Image 1 (cartoon, helix red, strand yellow):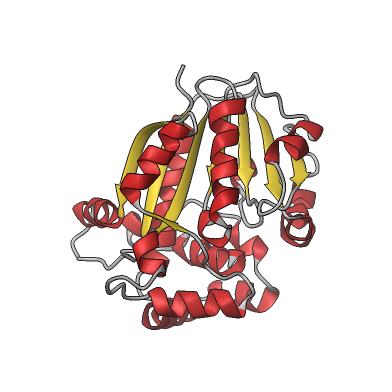
Image 2 (cartoon, one colour):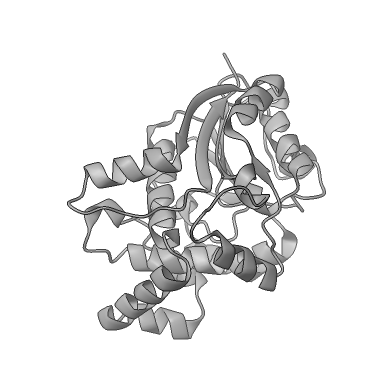
Length: 280
């Protein structure tokens, strides 16, 4: 699914509509060369976007808006360490302006790091800020051990990004990651993540666009498995030592998008975004 996310970001980078334009100038680097060649041409970008709209309604808009929100959150935060969990197609370590003293960690499955992320890292071999990789199976392992081995300091205020990941892990793994931030990281540390609505994954209600996403994720061997009820999630965060800073529903995202546009948009109704922190 990381490749589809990279494709959406790469097309969004060329968007003529500012409300859907994201700043990921490196997303195309994660794509195979035929797709890289295709998105360099405006007519082909349009065809790919229209195909995606027909097959996965609202997914392109959601990825674009989510990328903007995560980018803005990083830019507005004060932290000493940035930890990108599930870093397979994330280029923020290079394209965003980070505090000079900031340590950056990329944590992902060993195969994902080797296949995607380290390939991009080689393009920035002379970058003054070293980016440290932590090979970890987020579905099986305690994140603390791999991060500490990579140089993570639990006493430094940290910002964790968990973008497009929670729905592909089991619930216990997601809660383990949240507990790590809430119980074992410095006060003021925060995590930003998106999640799927449990009711949608369990067949409750009508969620346009969900069926195709479930099928393609299953075909790619990355089935969407875990969702949360928003109210229960807030309670879970408190139990895990985290304080909710904000939660945005699909309706919130759609309202924010349409307030900056002259047209209406359809975003998937089965996602939500959260920012939570360990209290000072």
